[in-house]
Length: 266
Length: 266
Image 1 (spheres, rainbow over the protein chains, first blue to last red):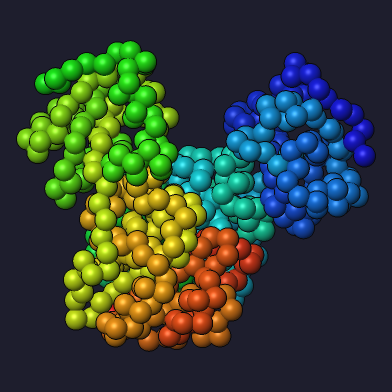
Image 2: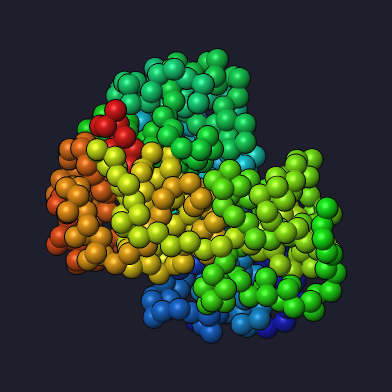
């Protein structure tokens, strides 16, 4: 099925794939890497146009790989087989599963979002760790958020660890990257209420009305919300904490707030 | 301040410290490793008797280390200085901070727990990943659980990654390891209601009464709850899920359920 087989670690394509772990070469090429069966399957389900699919049968974990490869080929992907060593070099997983795709990056702006009558949105500011951003995407998907807006991003949404931690949700939940001021103006123009989580708030998140058009705003891991959002959000709320002051990380605080909104909205 | 300095990677003590990453040597020696400033500080705060404290000033990140070392010495710890290379070998962090302690393991049984009039407990079954168990401990602490009971453990509670992911909560939240049947009988005898989270339940977790004496029961990552708990819990509940079927991992499902209980109980 593969048109080509690469065995040399010195092959220029192998070198290029390794480079794509870094943001700059990724942005320059306008592509990113999607590793692993589950992630690639989800990309195909969402009609992400995979440019290339690198495979290595010696790393396969199950029996479903040929069907997935067939599906990728049918969707127009070029299949390249790698030797075991070459695949280990391009994979970022410690124990790769023999499947790595190259997909085109996309760019969505606020205007691309189509909102429902009662939007339920998540806005995250300057998240630093790719793993946290991926987990947050997954949580937003589970809670049924219509879109996730990443303000003033520190981590690249196409970082391999975002793709991994999101378990492919990156392909299904609409994701927009924009500046905080633009996001605030846009939310205001759409009549969406902005509820910001901060330990400094007086009101408990469970006492706030989280029904109707809602955007939950979450700050970064290290600094929390910026002054801009603290000042410009409609309502600050806090999550009560019984134990150590730093017991809730941002991904956990996000899921708690989102699911309280789900409870109130249903 | 150190009584001794070890520079040789062949030193028997270095080899022993490396071995303590594995469970068997850890159990045989009855000790475990606590790495990092924050974790060691918490251990000292909770009067954990640190046997030894390994330090390497070349790895220090801040200026608070000498005070912490002094505190450990005052609490009876023996301080050993390591060369940069030796420390890197015994550390399990990629970027160590020059502080590693050896602490005695402990064993708590169900009878050691003193319950309040309206206990709020978390029971987890057969959690596989140390990182998940650590995150769950942290969440239980944030939610104000009185104790965490680990049934039929797959991962060792003294695994370095449990210590790390719990950010030291391991030292503050009472943690008991026991068999499911014993835990069930004990909870029943104490009049504690057992609410088990499973996707198969009809009732939503938000529709269940989570006040009064409560134990939230969570299953393992891969298999969910065992038949034993599905059959013997008082009430199965489910968390609604909007997105992909596997969007909530066990740590996230735990935090959602615990904080709904907190909401109802306050």
